[in-house]
Length: 418
Ligand code: GDP
Ligand code: IMO
Ligand code: MG
Image (tube, rainbow, N blue to C red; front, side, top):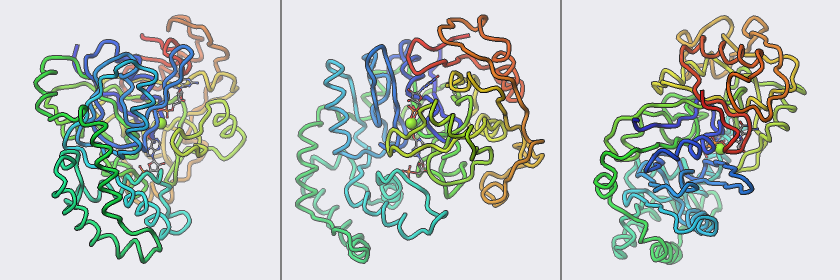
């Protein structure tokens, strides 16, 4: 068996956490390679609900978890999450690459400033976790990285430079300027608590050479910084080709693309198949479509195969997982978007104004399917109602990729392998 990557194909919240937990049984190492605590992954195993932001879902099965240098890490948030997971899992095996850049308080303030100067529909609707500004600092060569934390004088020097750069902006917007001593203390306390988790990439490479690695994506392909609907994207590359850079591991892997039976999006940006009627509200309620991180109601719409096919291509997807088919159970009519004003994915530029501003769909852009009724308790694919099988076959034929996992509910055991 090869290494595998679980990648969200929509705008996030496809159920990556649940599927990573499910698949991780057969892997030795589970690795995050991008994003930060903007991610929220909910996993339910029997009576316990785990809400994870930074720690890979493989931790629940006691797998070794590695956070690669492509992520951005908020020390206070990580420490809380780590302490909470230690209450549920005995001696979790979590390692942090020493190259990870940190998110500090000024990044969160700058995230707020960035949003405040944008008007109305131009606002991105970020998670306000400081993700964008932390990645800006990485590219701008100003990040404080985990390996800086054991060098007090270097750390202070870096913070002084950062202060010179950001204080004028922070004071212009009436925000608290950078307090060097406060930051040094926070980083010092943090370092003392987690230094045993910090490792050099080489150690992971050496110990997991020839072992099986599962990569856990965060966000979704349509939020990719370069390939998503810029500027309504996150600030990292979410697609699979970032895996080797973000993890620092030079290995081969195959990608399993994961998507919901419908679509959701949090924050602003184009969503051609969005529903503004009672059906949209019904899906949001039944699917409990409220963000784990920001508690915002997620926008809901029909499954969009145009963007899904694009996502499959840019991720080199070899197999698919569909989640939340149970949410659509009781609907009489279920729609799938197959084109945008008659255009298919190879005719669309997902960055241009046709997609960003003008993509209004009409009835000829959708195909309709009858509902499939109750599916609770079904344990194998052969027992699925014919209408559900037809829905799944239509998607497979359109994408020309097999669906190998079907998720029928939030719990680990509500998962059907074909
Ligand atoms: P992630 O960010 O991709 O890991 O997804 P989230 O955890 O943010 O959102 C997915 C939500 O749907 C979580 O609350 C899961 O517990 C839940 N979920 C996952 N798979 C299914 C499913 O097949 N059916 C239902 N009803 N809920 C699911
Ligand atoms: P998971 O891993 C859904 C969205 C935000 C916003 C945009 C930019 O749980 O699927 P950011 O704070 O990253 O600068 O916000 O990206 N976003 C997500 N939406 N699921 C996520 O993660 C997301 N992470 C970021 O809502 O539109
Ligand atoms: Mg999520």
